[in-house]
Length: 306
Length: 291
Image 1 (cartoon, each protein chain N blue to C red):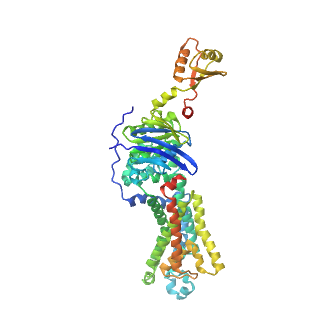
Image 2: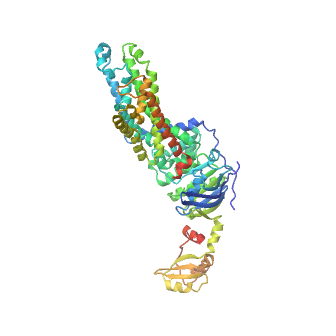
Image 3: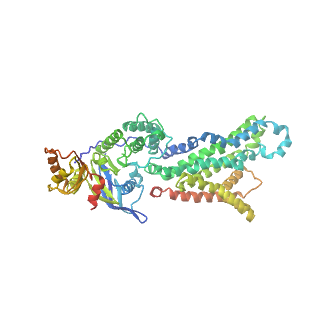
């Protein structure tokens, strides 16, 4: 089976006067590509463009050789939207089987495949229960199952991990990663960077205010982050003594003393971690705990935007 | 660098014919009334006018033959006339069940999918917006046809079976095909209109209100204008009145208050064209999701 690529070429999208995406160029091949951004960053718009549900205002979206609005391109597609309020009265299996019948599977084949994929996602025992009685995580998995059911070559998942408990998250992550490893093109969105760190083996695209800020492997992005100023909180029983030692370090730019902790702004986080490790390992036992304060998406964005 | 396998395989299946993809949608729609609270009760109540006629038919078995004067006095209740079968459907008595069924089911069919975000999932599957719409109309039509076509047919069949001879059959077989055809056209047109209105609205409640305006509002306005202008045909701005007149015409029956059947046909076709044209625009893939 040949690989199918999903290509965004200089894509912009406006809703009237509001710009949702600006000049996004992105190429997704086999494997899982993570799409990360805050709520309203343009992730869902990007995924809807890929699904052929929206047309770009300018630029081109190609799914394989054709725009995703074409039927041939759509046949390659599995789409898991972010909403989950449909058909509460159906059982999980009935819903997935029903969706697969709309893809052209016979009633029997659809039922069998629905059972198989729900089982794979850990819903085997609950698949005959009504969706109305499902938890948020179970609904998410049903939604994912309908997208995975026909084994699409391109899988678009809009916030698929939202609301999942750790066990379900593990199951879903495993299935999605496996699909990507087998060679399908998977685009997964999330507003939480670390959700995608272990999943997105083909790279992460960071979207902010409709612009693509960065695209690359997790390691590449991390390397960039380690070169920037970073804030840390150090828990200690002797904040003044710790602060006195910290100001002597070249890697520390600023120190703020609290009642039971010290906040540190570093010049480069890699050097600071090495210095703090040495300080913590010294006999004075000045540091009880070290908490990175901006190792989240907000901080990444802050860095990239600036 | 991640290394990807080449083991991913499409699911092996021979796609079913387009109609078979529409059928699950139709079946889902057909069963929609039974999924709402008290749906079964509502459905049975909607059959009440026909059930009433059936009881009347069974209770009065033989009266028409033994008491010829009864036929003159109660012409509307004579089972050898089309009016007996059409009264539970196209009169005010039949309007209420029609209104209940279409408002609760047909007029909400697409609006509820739109509100739930389900259209997005449909549009990424091997079904076109037209196929989806046809599926919804078909399901809605089958539901309406159960009450407004099958039930009158059962009523007719009962009248033939309980008659002492072939007289009832001979008296009614002439108008039966036309009547059933008319009722089928009526159910299909109304299903298409209601589902079309549903496609225009953003929420199920808005769709129900819009539908009530289309059938009740236009009926009221039509009657007021008819009296003001003294022109009977003005009442045909109501699709319900137009469709009812079309049924009467198919059955070869002319009610007391009547409108030209051609005008009724044109009015019904115009209403359908307007609503379906707007619905087609609103259901385009890119329109349905962007807003």
